[in-house]
Image 1 (cartoon, rainbow, N blue to C red):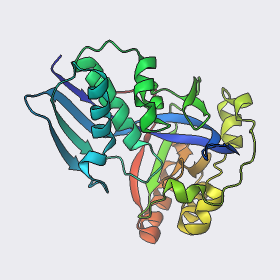
Image 2: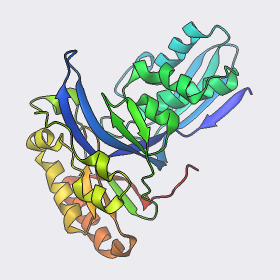
Image 3: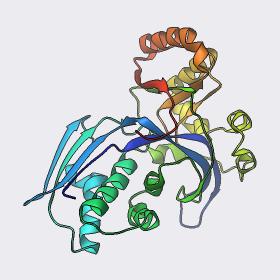
Length: 285
C-alpha cells in the first residue's frame, strides 16, 4: 500500500475528575473519552522519494518540526528502519487549545498510516505504546471508541456508552486555555462515582462534572456564560471538554428551534465560533 487517506477525529470528555497529585508532578484523573467522528482533520500519507510535509487549513501556533505528526514520524523511523520517505498532506480543521485532542489524534492516525503503508504488522496495542510518549490521550485515538480513562489519561477501559441520536453542539470561543493554566490551583477531590454508572447514560450525564471548570471559569468567565446559555437552551448535559476552552452540550433532537435561537445570541455576544453542530452517529465514517 503506497498511499493512505485518514480523517483524525476529535473527542469530548464526559466528566473529568482530578483524583490526586502524583510524586512525579502529574495528576491522576478519571474521565470518559467519547469520539466525535464528524469533526476531523485530513491526513494523506504516501511513499515518496524525498520527505515533505504540506499543511493547509487552520494555522498552527508551532513550527512544522514541533507538530506531533512530524515527531511521531521521526520516532517511528528510528524504531523501524523499513520506514522510508513520505509525502504528508495535512489539513487542520480541529481547533487547537480547545480540549478536543486534535493533535493527539493526528499523531495516532499518523502511526496507523505508517503501519499500513510500510506493512509493519503492529497490533492496536503496539500502536498505542508507540504513540503514548507523545501525549496521554494519544493511545485513545488508536482505539477510537468510548473509553473510561484513568491514570494520566492513558489507562483505558472500553465502555458501552452510546450517545447516538443526541444533538451535539460544540462552541470554541476566541480564547484558548493552556493545560498548565488549567492545572494551576486545582485541588484533587479523590475518586468519583463515575465508574459505577458508566453504562447508564442518564445517570452518567447527571453525575459527570469537569473539575477544570473550577479554575478555568474564574479566569475565563465567558466560558461559564456560554455553558449557562446552553443549559438554558435545554441541554441535557453541558460541560467544558478536557482543559478547555471548548464548551459542548448534548440536546434531545426535539429542542432544535430553541437551541438555534440561543446559538445565534451566543455568536453575537461572545463572537463564538460554532465548530460542530450535528446529530451524533454511532460509527466512524
